[in-house]
Length: 111
Ligand code: FES
Image 1: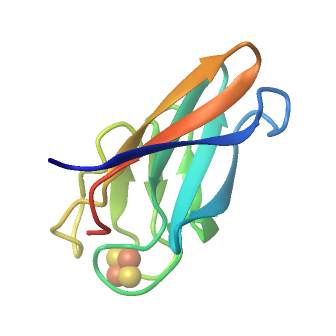
Image 2 (image 1 turned 90 degrees about the vertical axis):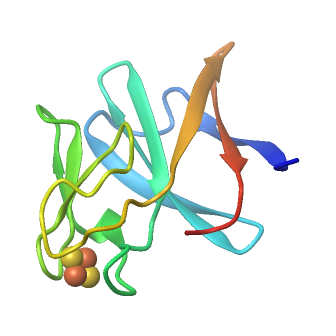
């Protein structure tokens, strides 16, 4: 069975709209962002090379992030690599908001 872990990221007003930041969960860096009332969380390390996606470019209309090194675009919703050179996804994580607090549920090992 795959183990799940839910941890608090921040209060709902703890991150500005259209901003991205990171947190560490058991040695794994998770990038999370807010677009309006929607929250997204993905593994922070690009699947193409060891680069932090949270240092890339958030595209709020498309709900994507562009890797700062080679420009692959990843879906914030699914983690899918939408453009080359990355061909593998990054793992996306469920985010929930409960009573003004934002939580992420991490499942599985880093990809
Ligand atoms: S390191 Fe991200 S696309 Fe190459």
